[in-house]
Length: 114
Image (cartoon, rainbow, N blue to C red; front, side, top):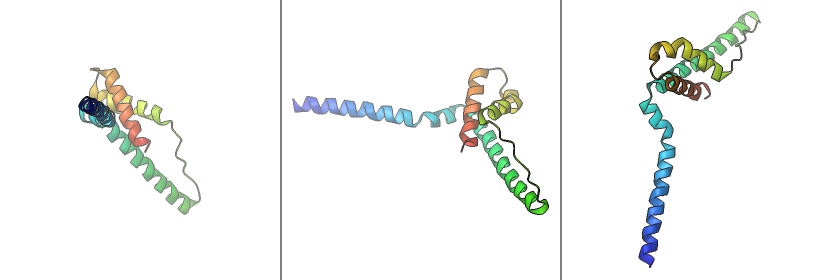
């Protein structure tokens, strides 16, 4: 009787472990398999770096001239969608366009948002 309970508990434990590992690696597997997701992350990272450099430049202008250069506030998802049209779509074309667009925008948002 106890042997049956132990086998059943092992099976339950293995199923739970498998589910946890599947959910934990969801983003990683997408990053490994989707070129458009990786490219979106790269573009988002470049956007974030450029925004940081502009803030430094703005502070320098303010110190030198007393005027403030303001970075326009842009809704991040709209910016990533616009970047898809300008950069992503020409690179990936029409093949799997809906999937590529979604992956690109999701990848972009992961880095712009951080």
